[in-house]
Length: 438
Image (cartoon, one colour):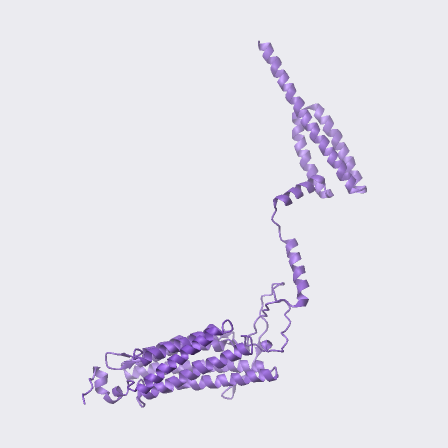
């Protein structure tokens, strides 16, 4: 039997652990290939459920199928310079999927601690945890390995506390309804919580006892344990989460979305009164290790309805009419023509006075050109206008409008005649001057 080639310093000093660091079982490779196919089939099934499926339910099994396809062919592991094996595809899948899974859980509720949102902080902590795990795996020094492992475990504890709080807030909302369907959702949430904590706890334990940690079990065994953990937290968990969120709750983790539940009436669902303040938050008494977590709030979402309730249609129509009246309209050609006709006809006293003042200004310029005879005619017409104006205040406005039109026409005709006579006089004077010169 040929002796194995020892590569690197670590491999020469840790021969037994080096021999346990590689997958040498055909059964394990075949099992990984089968699981890659199963994950791919789940991806296709989720795509066929569109549009009633979130993108996370498609993304997670798709990433898992690629990960196990690489692992089954032996391309998911790299050998480092000192001889250790680094399962890069497994670590990369953790980095790509853990924040997304926490985002799915965050859809149940947004929890805060003293006005600080904890959901996005937990997602950031998951990224830091995976990076710490990768660094611990490739770290050459033993003390650095366990230091990075400790930092990653600290982030995991923080994630556990946030996720536990989110699950408790979700249970609080559905348990308060009390209907059989709400109790079914409560059972599903408890099942999801159990699967989450079991599967996520398996990963650090398997890492700890596998060749990446203290090298207690063979890589064949650790690969099967990782597969079981992935099957729980991604495949099984994803199917239960999708069937609950979209099969029962219409895609929203809200007790009001339960069938048979009346949606709470929104005072201003379309922002008619421009209310921008969020509803007040509920206080949730959540216990962890026998102690109540203080300052935990359940943030209520603003009401969003696709269709307006029947009793709000009149309010919306009236609000639109008021906004149309208050909004300055764009003037078209027809509107401008009607506007000129209205003011030319003197629809009301104010318009009449304003148009009268404008006409008087124009007529004053014409009076200077036309001479003394023009002043007499205009003064007579202005006197008539003043008399007509006084009558209009006491009589019918329609008669006054007709009289006003006639007087304006007379003034225009008088102005044109005076201009013509003035031009004729000037031409006659010019001709006489020419004859005198001759």
